[in-house]
Length: 186
View 1: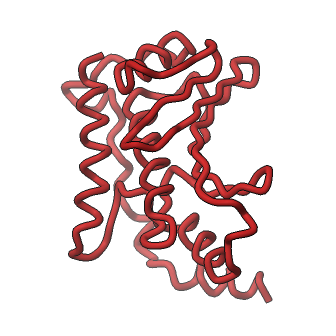
View 2 (view 1 turned 30 degrees about the vertical axis):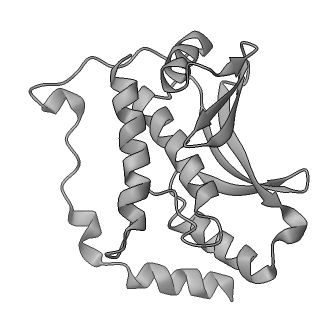
């Protein structure tokens, strides 16, 4: 049944997708910027301290505050991974209707952040390989983690993209823009 549903969805995709022009590569653009250096824990520390000078760190984990939300960043250089997380609610407080909405949000509105369950807690999380992580990806991911946690129960959104004409999208985008401005100072 699931296989038929997936096949039906694929058939409904526009046929002209395959005929689209490929995106230009950096060498195709006249003002190609030099690639960013690989992300390291030292570089990550510098970026995070620009976002919150009062953060706490032990060298592989950071706790900082963004928009009054405590965010924990954990790195594992051996596995080349990082994750930024913040608790949202105890998992036993999540109704089945909310769980369905959470899974829908993970598919479309959560963006690069995701809701996740661990240790009986619903988390907002951004998980990424460490070395290819770019500064603006990190900053946007942190903003999305905060937006996802703050919009739980309402928009369930990472905030970088919104449809509709309400006020929420502009408020959530303002957080990410503010973080990106702080990141420009680095």
